[in-house]
Length: 72
Length: 262
Image 1 (cartoon, each protein chain N blue to C red):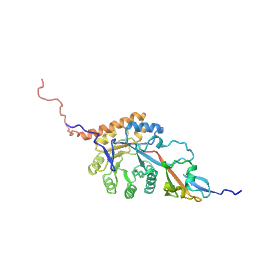
Image 2: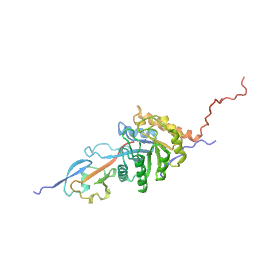
Image 3: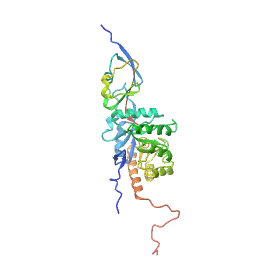
Image 4: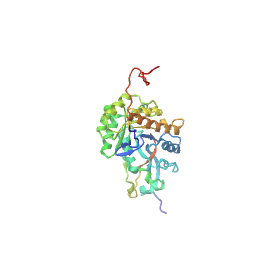
């Protein structure tokens, strides 16, 4: 049996192991992120949410997912 | 005599019309439901919100948008917690991406203890944001010269502090606020430092277009009652300002006629 290769990336400061060749859309889906309520950065660049299924993730990529919370 | 018609007296920010002149923050409440109820009672149509990381380990955590509907209440993304222009710009660009928010509140702090704004970084950020098409409401100190510079850099509203954020000290420099009022036609909104409802009335009587309150409501012993008190205080202050106060004189001036005294 072929072994599934995994890579490590960082999401919101936490190290996560994901399947190699995953795209951003798959990762966000697994995390159950409500796309209409967040903004996403990949390596400090803002990502167009419509294009997330075309973005392949690489080793050591840094993803930031933010939303609105209470504040003054 | 015509009464002050507050229905026609709307607050206009970046071409958007608002009936309430009270803006409230959504931080420091005990719960999201308490926050939502206080906002409702305050009558506010604009609320400030912060941009933070989604908690990816607790997916069931309640979301602000589930309690306060952004279709009914205008979200004003804020850069609170940013200490330089780079962080502030990054935060607001992300805020815009969440769902097209262009009206934002810029707040670049310079000192962790007094939370005073870093005006050099604030000015730089205002210029960049205005060029990128943002409509920027700018938290600033109560310096008329800086306020003018912000206006010339494309700010959509000037938001001087009354006192340090969360201090509850009330308006410390009325003269500066009045000078800023005289020199600008932009919306002038007191942001930060108010402690009780009467502080809001004073701000409005000085000619401010609105006030922004968070801690004074959220941390009051009875937040719902305080939200209502601030709502009424802002209305009272605005009515008082529009009604034209009497001149101040040093000596007494009797209210009853001096003729016909027995």
